Amino acid sequence: MQTSGLSKHVIRVSGILEKVYDEILQDVQIGYILFADEIGWRVKSRNWWLWVSGTKKSTYFLIDKSRGGDVVRRILGEVFLGVMAVDGWGTYLSIISEQQSCMAHILRKIRKFYKSFPGLKDIAAFYVKFRRIIKDGERLQSLCKEFGEEKFYRRFTNIEQTHKLVKSLSARVD
Image (cartoon, rainbow, N blue to C red; front, side, top):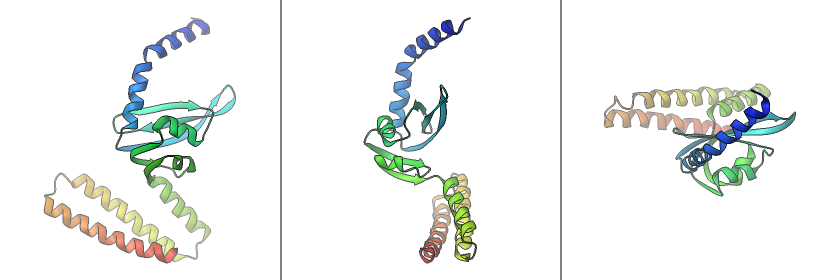
């Protein structure tokens, strides 16, 4: 099969799947928790961007020339009612939404900050406590179904107390 014949089939299939693509976008737009990211993508030797927006149920992909807020608004609209987990790229601030920083990015930033200022021991203490909170939360989440309501609440309260300690440490760093 020649390239032109293959291209015609791809165009035909994309037309058939257009409704499915739109349904995936709608599903992402009404998601409660959304993970969003963008990565460089080469198109005819030029830099474009692959935008990925995913929920637990659906993932939407879009390739665009822009890495700006206009793309985020095209995908999600002016307001997103769920919580977005993003990497901190400013373009995600172009819409109204609750946002959560990606844990991998937070931990990377803390490590980078500590490397830049190794004399600030509070940063290392904060990092250790913060990782402990994350691990405790993950463990608690995985055991949630096994716990009764009372035991779950006790464990959650312990994590909250640790969180208050981390808050006080972070206030000292600021």
